[in-house]
Image 1: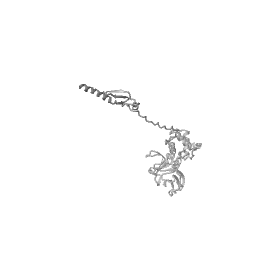
Image 2: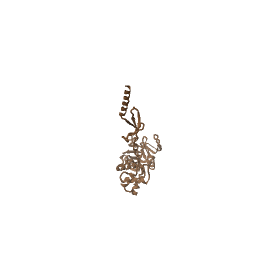
Image 3: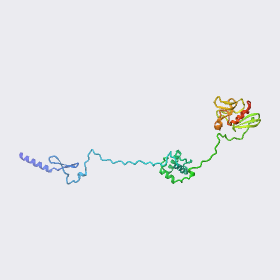
Image 4: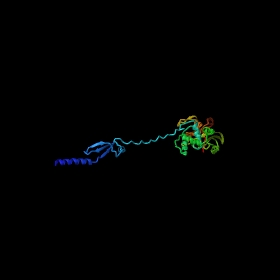
Length: 300
């Protein structure tokens, strides 16, 4: 009985072994076969699935897939300027003359590339749709040349306008002298603020006349009728410490006297209230003739 069970068990184990399917699990590039005794053994790939290992290659966890490199943009090249601020010479003069043809440079060509020239170039670039830099690159120069004519010599070197030189300190245009009636009798220094003149008159007749100037806005020369109080040939102001040669005082500290500043700068200056004379010879002669007590009339 025991032998029969033992033989039956052997036959049953062989039947199970022959009935088992051999499972092939493909891991990576190797095939593992499950044997009837439950063991694992490697074997070659089955003929029924050729190339399966090649279709699914093994991937390792520590090796990342390669990244595609980003395309980098090439740096933008800036056009090399042909002319820029600070440049000098005939090329700059030609540039200015061509800009003048387009009414973009309203001065005479100087040959110096300064702020005005840069502004003209920038305006031209804006008009033509170019990049506004204020400097002349090759594209700007070509656009300018194609829209202008070669400048003539007169355009490159325009003649300067001749203007008559005005004498230093020329007085304003004098209106017709209107003598005040107070000047018509006696010995009078007749001084007109309207015509900027002093007339030395005796009984209505003019003995001499000279240009004069008066005080400024805050130190005006007084108007009215006065008398010569005293004279001082080499007087120096005690307030302003300035020379007052041939001074003839008529109202406090105000006097008729020679002024070196008036002689040098004319009507661009003013006195501190005195009546300044710029002709030294005339005022010296007047100083000899005028006496204390003579009348002084100052009017507009």
